[in-house]
Image (tube, rainbow, N blue to C red; front, side, top):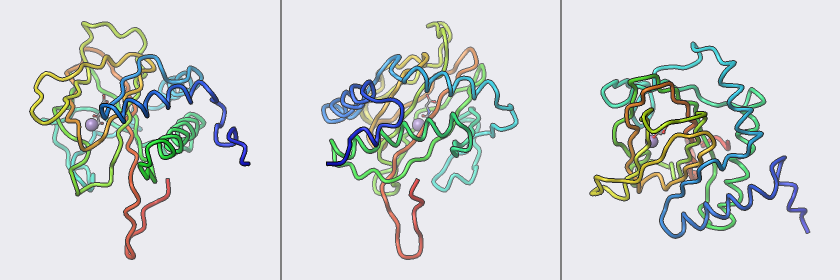
Length: 222
Ligand code: OGA
Ligand code: MN
């Protein structure tokens, strides 16, 4: 028998509890909100890393399918930095999301194949208007994951993510961007927005994708 701990990197059983909750939430309602759920060592690594990053590493975020930096500051104002795994913190994050991918594929047969993610920085006044992360039949993004890296978030800081249950839902469910919150949702199903923030707001947004390789275009495996 294959030793199941081999796929567990350094985080172990606490993750299985979290991943199991995410899997059952996804099965039942298509999204999962988990306050203070990011493993503490991982959260601290990412937070330290953010603190050591130069502001120049962040680029004004773009919009659009090919993400050719079609910038539209009316829709989104945040700045992003893609996570490539060159830093320890980036590597630890990609290991953790890979564990999640393996777990969810086993439990839900989602066929998640690859993952892409970036840090986002919203400065005071920044927002991201209502949008979906993937369009039905046009995109291979299946599952969105967002984690928050903000200590001591207060209600008056604003910056909530609002997740809408479908295209007609105007009320939505509010998610406070407090440290270690892990949000996962089906990319095509849930419009969402980031309300204007009143202070610096840091998150990581990532997407698990299907393999849509064709003979003339091969998806990267990670
Ligand atoms: C995104 C997004 C939400 C957030 O980048 O697509 O919706 O809270 N981010 O950072
Ligand atoms: Mn989004």
